[in-house]
Length: 329
Image 1 (cartoon, rainbow, N blue to C red):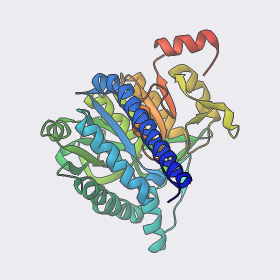
Image 2: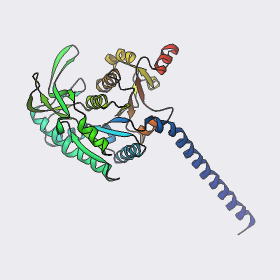
Image 3: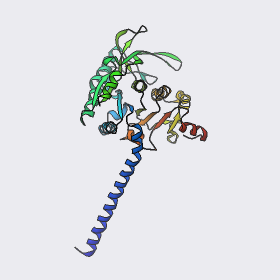
Image 4: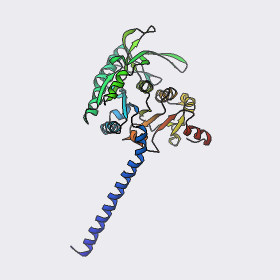
C-alpha cells in the first residue's frame, strides 16, 4: 500500500467518524428537545384516532405501533380509537354491496352494518391489538358494545340545508369511561372500535348497533377521560385555509376561526375539524390533525417545538391571541 493510499484511508476514517459524531449529536439534540414535552405529558391521557392510509401501508402500521408503545413507555397513557374505512370498502366490494357517502359520512344499511361491525371489531380491531402486542403485552381491544361504554342515537344531519338519512349511523349520546380507565390503570393500552348500541329517547336499548364516525368517537372518549390531547391521523398534511394552495397550511388555529372555515372545507375534512372543535369546546386543551402518511408524525407533533399538522386551541390560548394580534398562522 502506498503512502497516498494510506493517507486516503485515514481521511475516509476521519470523515466517517465525524459523520457518526454529527448523527449522534443530532440524536442527542432530539432527546434534549423531547425531554420537557415528555415531562409535561407524562401521566396524562392522549387519545389517538387511527385511520386512513396509516392503516393499510405496512411501514406506516409498524411506525404507528412504535409510536404508541413509545408513548406508553414515556409514561403517557395512549388510547387508540380506530375506524376502518379502507377495510370496510374492500369487504363491501368483495361482497358486492354498494357504498354511498353523504356529506363525508357513510350511509349504513342493515346489510352493510353487519359488514361494518364484523370488519371493525373482528378484523381491524384484532389486527391492531395483535400489532401492538407483537411488541409486548400492551393492548386490550373493546368496542362501544363492551361494558356499555357508549350509548348512541341515530344521527340526524343536514347536507346543503336538506335533512339526510344516513341509515344505521349514530352519534355518541353518553360515555361511561370506567372500563376504559380500568384498562389504563392496569398498565395497558385501550384499542376501541367505533360501533355502539342504540338507545331510544327513553334511555332504553333498541337492540340495534350503530356505525359511529371514529372522529366523533375519539372526541367523546377524549372528553370523558379528561385527555390532555386529541390526535386525529389523516391523509393530508393538515388544514388548508385555501385548498389547493399548499402554502395555505394552517399550523395553529383558534376554535372561532375554525368554525368560520368549516362551511368552506372539503366534505371529508368537515367531520375531522368538527371533532376538533367539539373536543376543545368541551375542555380538551388541544386537538391536532396530523398527517398519518408520514412515519412517526405523532412523535413529531407531541415531542418537538415545531410540531407538524394543524393544532386547534381555545380562543383564549396565548398562541391564538398572538395570532389574532399578528394576523399569522
